[in-house]
Amino acid sequence: MKRIWGSPSPSTARSPLNGQPVPVRLDGRTLFLWWGQDRDDNDCLATHAGRLQVADSEIGIRSAAALHRWQATAPKVQYEQVTDFGQNDAEGVRVIDVDEVRDWLSHPGRAVPVAAGLNVWNFATDVAYTFGRARADRGYWVDRSYDKLFAANVPWAFGLESYRPRWTRQELTALRRVQGDVVGLLRSMLTVSYRPARPAA
Image 1 (tube, helix red, strand yellow):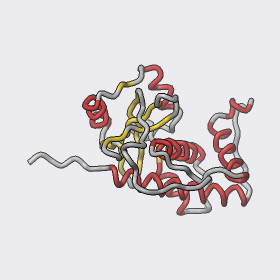
Image 2 (image 1 turned 135 degrees about the vertical axis):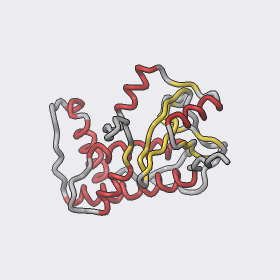
Image 3 (image 1 turned 120 degrees about the vertical axis):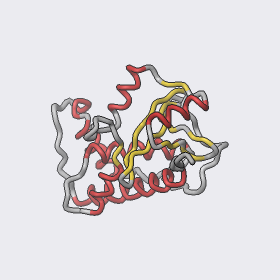
Image 4 (image 1 turned 60 degrees about the vertical axis):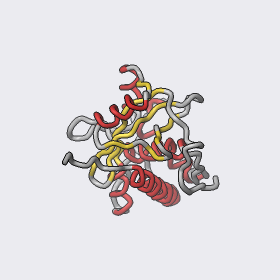
């Protein structure tokens, strides 16, 4: 697929009909975004003025949701959807860990972080969809890599109790290329969107 980069446009951005806070770890800090499904039942992120709506706390993103009158999902659906994204961190918060994938990219000898790898890949797909951007994340070796990440996270979908991937050189090359693109996309989109709260005077 052809990659489409450029500035996001308020007129083309999708919006969730209902959603929930989603934490993302990037550059050592945890940011919160509003994630849900649009009218076509596709996953996307809330935006404001052509940028992702980003806050530095769950309270902050919920306050933004209340301000913009975004609907929240019911608690049961909320919990099930968050469990799709990732592992618990030390504080018990479920996080999409971009830093873990970046660390793996910087240390080729380390094991593939299958949970963070799948979560970050899927989340980047949602961000790209939000702004109508195509991504170069298809192809024989890329598809094999994605399928192995998916099977490692949800082996029961393949009739297995567990699955530990064994990676070929071609799969790892494809995976590293896509994950590098994914991290670059998320860093650029989150950095341009994030505005840290200023302390009160």
